[in-house]
Picture 1 (cartoon, helix red, strand yellow):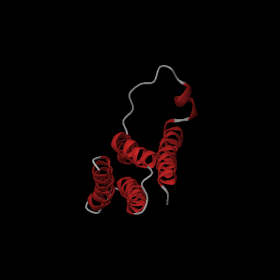
Picture 2 (cartoon, rainbow, N blue to C red; picture 1 turned 120 degrees about the vertical axis):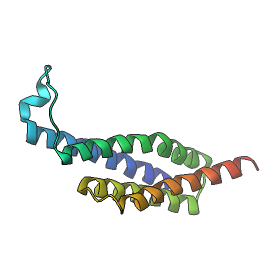
Picture 3 (cartoon, rainbow, N blue to C red; picture 1 turned 90 degrees about the vertical axis):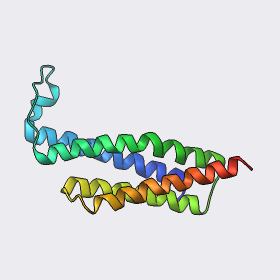
Picture 4 (cartoon, rainbow, N blue to C red; picture 1 turned 90 degrees about the horizontal axis):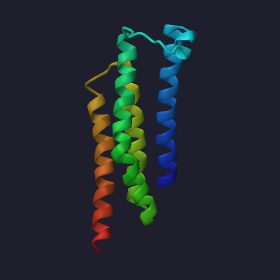
Amino acid sequence: MTLITSLIAFGLLTLAMVGFEIFFTYATQGFAFGFSSNRKPVDLSAFATRMKRALQNQTEAASYGAPIIAAAAFAGLTGGVETAAMLFVAGRTAFVLLYYTGITFVRVPAFLVSTLSIAYIAYVLFTTAMV
């Protein structure tokens, strides 16, 4: 998986998460809820809360993951960096699915796979930039 493909896959994952949350909100709150300008606070179910937290975590991951992958693509890095970018997307996908299901103990390794992959790409970027 190339770096650009990894960025696209990460973006599609995030878009799917947003869409899933919107459709779930319409299904549970009614279609008019989305068009109301006077929305009242709603008690969220456990699943809806997990969806919101997963999306928040995804946007936080995007703040450090996407720029590093984009910088690596701009620098023309290949090889192990591409594998790390693929592991970042796979780790984020596993993390989101595990977060949705409420499984906590396996979620941490998925988070670590994605975070350590970005750390590796950042390390390669810094070491090649200093040469």
